[in-house]
Image (cartoon, rainbow, N blue to C red; front, side):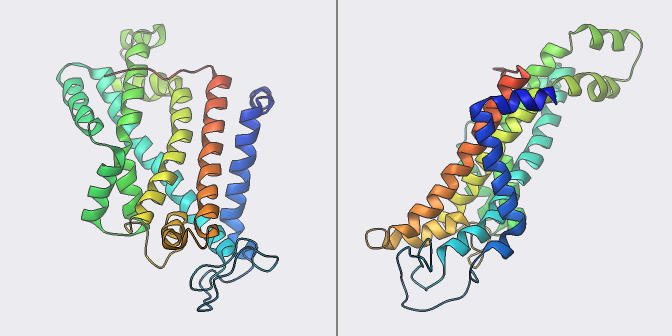
Length: 276
């Protein structure tokens, strides 16, 4: 309770919590909230925002608000999936590299450095081009692009914690190394990992939007924020709402995850560690 109170007293943290709660609510109950079928078409009916269509309609007459609401579930799924998959792999690599040191550390560190040299979007583009479109493939592609962020962070935390009193005591008592990692080091590194995870959700949403904008997203017939934005680029001068509203959805969501992550960092008293 004290932790929640401290987090909610942070104005940015409160804003982030509200945005994320609204996002999850819309993702879960989207089909009931959408005023129209997001795929229902009325050809030639390109309408600006009005009382009947709050965000207007696109070039095929589809309600933009309904499509933005429908795209929320995909964006949330990708963001959470990237944080879980990329975080799990990165945490594992960081723990192993920081704890065992030696040639294991050198091998993992060099591999992470090679990945770090590639821009995240380029790496995701290459992987999704090889794997093909689809929700799972998009999550895998974006997750791989952000593994290095988790690995570098956790390696630094592990280097610090492996020399702590409780880790040294575990080695003196003859505890297996995997037990020291799982029961002593990992729980004490959870603060920075959680903070990085919230930021990774925002990165995942941005990555999915970028891939969908380029036509390499989930599927061409699945409404996503990036795809809606891409559909509106040819009509921006005559139908501004086609790009503005999905763009605002992306911006507000990413801001919310960053607000929450930074407030969580201040509340936990954690700082990111510069490593590798």
